[in-house]
Length: 90
DNA sequence: GCGCTGACTGTCA
DNA sequence: ATGACAGCCAGCG
Image (cartoon, rainbow, N blue to C red; front, side, top):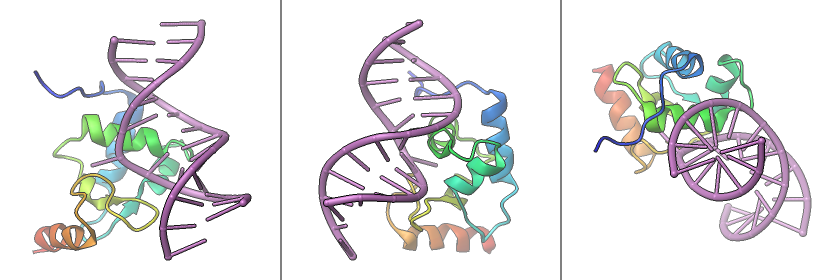
């Protein structure tokens, strides 16, 4: 019983493309991604794409909230975020 | 077609 | 600074 995930639509791939473009060590907020995805108000939809349709090709951990929080990938704290970033930076 | 939900965001109290 | 409310987009029942 696979987890419920969204289908791959243009929006999903678009969002994934945006996140994929994020340089390692850098982080982008859902809002920024949504804006680049031509949907400046679709921060939630972006989050959904990651949540239900996250790909290994998409470093969701580089996508954070506007508050500076991680969001839902690790849900631990900025420390975890730094750990991941540092890990890929290695 | 309607309503709910979600890894969200911004504003008001 | 914290809590609550409303708004937005997309998918699913």
